[in-house]
Picture 1: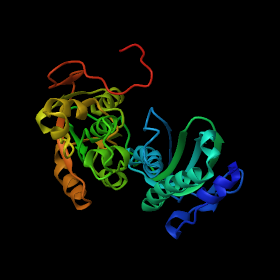
Picture 2 (picture 1 turned 30 degrees about the horizontal axis):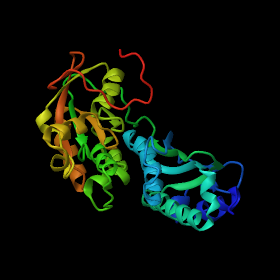
Picture 3 (picture 1 turned 60 degrees about the vertical axis):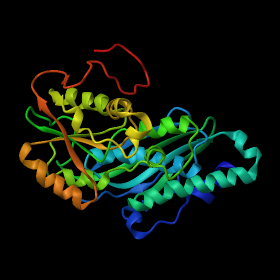
Picture 4 (picture 1 turned 180 degrees about the vertical axis):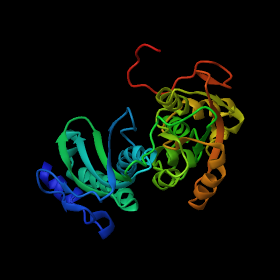
Length: 325
């Protein structure tokens, strides 16, 4: 039977290439990591917790769970315009799984492969963490760098700024719906969007030059736009017809449900940004060179609230339901 340090040694003490190891004076295997940020950079840190059957299906493929746990955390760095450097992971595993050694090894191998493949893609070194027994959950802390004073935040939007999104929307919610209906085709574009989301790190770095504010879309477009509006003190007018819908979403759900998924479904991990009008086209061209679309969906205003919706109350995902301001 695998013990805690067997799991760490076998599956998470991973060889890293030179790009991942830069700035790592001491990584996995000690009480803490020793890291050296580059001169002239600010350290950007974010943590994300993924809980089985809350953030992902417990019966999802293990490689998808590993990929997704890291991807959703990296998305926060993308929203700040940061370059990812390092991460630590707290992995809580169901001890009952270890009654079957063969199944445990297979799950851990696939999980580690999904996690490490994405980490390598973004030159991110796993430098520490913890493994314990309990209900399946994964806490990932990511650390990145951004030039001093250049981080994107939620606070810079101004009336007259254009509102735009990267990629397409609604695919996360659409993929979850298909999974709940029993669909298991890993190649289906909606299932792929839900199980293997893409953190927009390169796009976030590129947008630092033009965007006035940014946030990643994890809880739904309207919910995350609300966070940005509150921080910036602006209102918004949206063009429903301009919403870029994920491939296959309208066919799977119908046009009205697809638009609602794009507005409130969450799990898209695209970037929602504001830009001055003059910056939209150069930003669009730069992102197109990266293979990422940038779509204008509205405009910031000095009138509170969100305008242009067919109904006045849409709400994104919330873990805790409290008073509605």
